[in-house]
Image 1 (cartoon, chains in turn blue, purple, orange):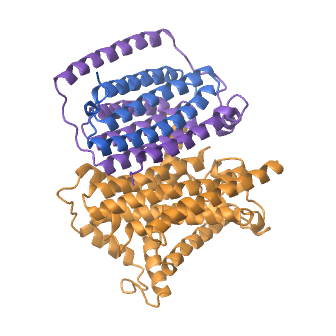
Image 2 (cartoon, each protein chain N blue to C red):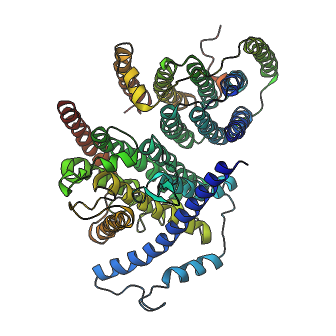
Image 3 (tube, rainbow over the protein chains, first blue to last red):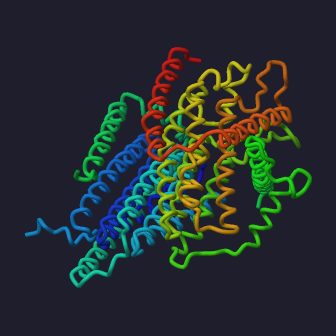
Length: 103
Length: 163
Length: 342
């Protein structure tokens, strides 16, 4: 697959995805949607790792992506468990409602 | 030429569905848009010569993590999100500004470096296994299994109903 | 477009058309076989009016379903309702695209594979597509806005991904023996006599695979999600006419995929098993067809014999019995492979 443009374009795509994910984390107010935007950011990073791994010719990037996926799975599980516990307490999933520690 | 068409098509699909993820009011639709993004990313991984990671992306991300998200959304019966109040609007504007700044900066860095693919790249499963179980990454590999166990126990403990 | 590329594309399109056509035909045939075989097992006759031995029954069913009215509940989520059968059938067909239907042969001066795509990570791809198949059920159950459908959808998807783990673990021993994820390599690793088939060498893995596969496809004794006597029709309660036909098609194609995989992974694929009997070309295809037919018949046989698992029994069995057995067998297989390096 000797097409030199893909690595560069994949990096641009990873930047776009990461930016969109960050935007989502700032703009959205539903906890679950925020978690999904964090996953979007992680995927942007994964794409960057794979692209650089292809450019460098080593497999370290791929192994790192493997570990990022594992950690993302663990984080999603615990994050959603926290969301369930929060919902049980406040009966809402709006981020602005969880400001008990403010001030 | 075929590769380029596939790449551009799935890259466009990924960006479009990412936009749907952050713009859609109903979390259920956001979740499905995220699944579409993950699957198109998987195709792009395959195109960049990493079949193992591509399949793993579908199995782990699209097939397991997103099912978890969907279950929680369905169980908690999450409704549409309402529009934000005044304070939230300013935050939104500042956030958009910061993100645009980030894109511009990273974009200029990217324009300067032009990485091309290295020759002799072999990311087959056999090679991946050799690297993953080599002394460099073996301990990390075993540590992640403990991490998953910890996450499992933690998730069950957190989400359990009080008796 | 350049010559060789066009040629490749034409071959791929022909293969795809052939596979889909054969699958749809097999699906129609299976509905008839299932009803007749089940009927004979239950001391009755089954469909025997349409055509000589009722052979035209699937066509009659098709025509009936085609002309039925498509009903969509008013409060249903329109996009999800429309998308669910599409997702179910797409994932079912994708999985069967990467399995070979016979040994590679030479025709028109080139090596041809009876396989739409010969992937390096073929088995993992099938696992991934199965994982995506859960969404068809989830979408169908949720979209109909009907408590029976939702319950059926949630139960069905929980069942599917619980048994996916055992399914994947049962493959690991087979993969270790073959040293590759490519299905062609796995079949070749069972060349020789019947005694080198994985069903003999790795019998516990075969048992785990068969049970997990029955649960994956939601066949009796694991068909609680569509429990006809319990949940109306489970997750496809609100579907009628062609959409219902699509969901049924997805289920049968999943069943066929699982049988084909059982043949390739455990029963030696297209090898005849008897040394001396040829298994190349058309012979290989015949052996393959016979084995797949046998597994499909066992599925129907199970349906006519066993009662249904209760939901908590089902989950208990999947998590606390099947997965430990599969895990222990993985250790055993790993030990054997390490001690006998090829």
